[in-house]
Length: 414
Image (tube, rainbow, N blue to C red):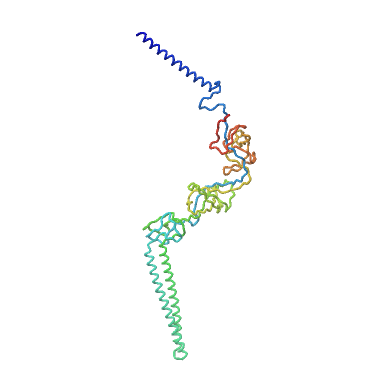
């Protein structure tokens, strides 16, 4: 029994020894493999980290100095206004009570369209009375004409009888007097007709004033009164605005040099109308400043066929003030302050893969372009943007297109 136990214990010990030798062999293999991959161990790089030998390269957009024509523009704030007499508050010609309103805000109307109706019963009765007086006056004229004909016939008959010494001379004189009286009565009757017809026209005009009509074609901007409201000649029923053409009143600062003339082209835009550009012309320039003497009014006439520009809308006005031809230009972003002379400007030139600082003198700026008066030549390659504080001789990799950031650093492979 003791011999059997000793045999079992010896077998187990032998198995543990074998397992230890196997583990040591695996460790030795792993160490050998790691040594083979790392070489001498001096140039190894941990996994996931950049190679410290790689030199960073600055990638910047490169462009050329161009010869261009730049337009110097004035940017002015403005407000849309209706043309004179193109924004009208419509009131009735007589006082009365409104019995109907035919329009609503936003409705398009033509010149002469009915805006509202007033109670017309009293004016209509006045028209009827005036018409009756005209008819009576006309009848009086016809009667006066008849009396004149009778007087003329009597005078002719008596004239024959006097020649025949049948009638007395005094009867002929009396007949001539009757003719003169009939003629005067006819003139008076005709005058009464004229007066009656004038009164009828006045009554009809008063009746016509009970129909409120639009004095122009346009859009109903406001409606002020409703049915059963009382109106008079100073109370507007509605406002009609014609905005097929508008005036933009712009404010030119008196301190800003400008050379404007009537007829100059102007571009009008509004934040409320993104992407929409309206081209107008300078109509006139106010010969006097505002009350504070800080601005001069510039009026621009603009077409507005779709009524997109609204009265009172704030807009931005751009007017070409001067045109500069055949000048050297670079992107505005290419010009930076000189760190060694903050009051000076500089540009980084690009040649043989490296950049160099060059001081420049600048002129006008427009459309994201900067005029260069001195320091560069046409066709020279320069850094378009992102090059500030870079030492001369820095190696740069040219980008065909501008980057979203100022610059980008990448690793240079061996």
